[in-house]
Image (cartoon, rainbow, N blue to C red; front, side, top):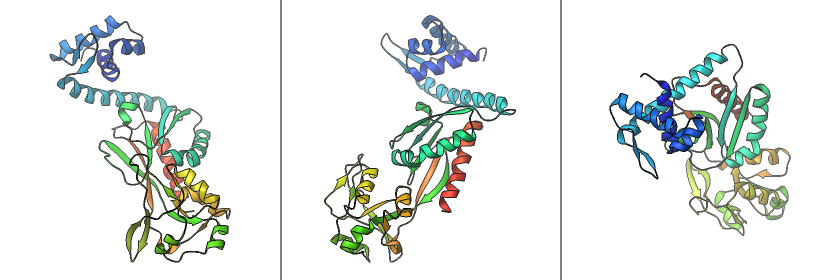
Length: 301
């Protein structure tokens, strides 16, 4: 390749699907941007982009070239950063996505500790439960709860396992009694969580006769926000099943009391995902190692 800059220009045009927007990002003129891509196509002997007055799209050859070129440029950037960091501590911007409830309750606390340990790193945190495309959206690390869907081209690191806790306030249990078997929950006011994506109630899980079984119970309150369900439980409105990370503080302070502990289901995994690369940026590696360490502390609580 005669010019790496032409490849970088093409990748930016492919990402933005606009010569004008790519030119603005690269501090070039639109004609210079178009000329750089044309030179690259001439050198390769193939057409990489379909151009019209209104849109820009990748050809089949362009899609293949973009996929490889983007990955190579990212690895080159990581290599440059790694070489710069050999004599200094990890630095730069880290873009992270966390599940919303976990991020609000624990993510900001952990990130405060992380930034204190690595003051040369800045973090851009997104709290969301949707599926994200790390490469297209520029995320360095995504932390999610539960079993993973498609994780192709991603590295997955288990952070910790979190229990599902069935609980209520001591006052509620004193008044209505403590259930001794999951089937008895039909006699209680059960606070339900509705999944916003599916519109369905999230079932309750229990280990019964060494098998994981799911149950649905009725109650006077259904909410499509897990934190709000937890708040309702702490207000004494009924019994809830919630993740351990949501219940731990209230359990420790005596605001909630676990019931049916003998029927706890399997613990739920928390996982960090990042793009598979030959070289991992020091700032990403530092963050992953930090979260794994904190996960070990959490698991040993």
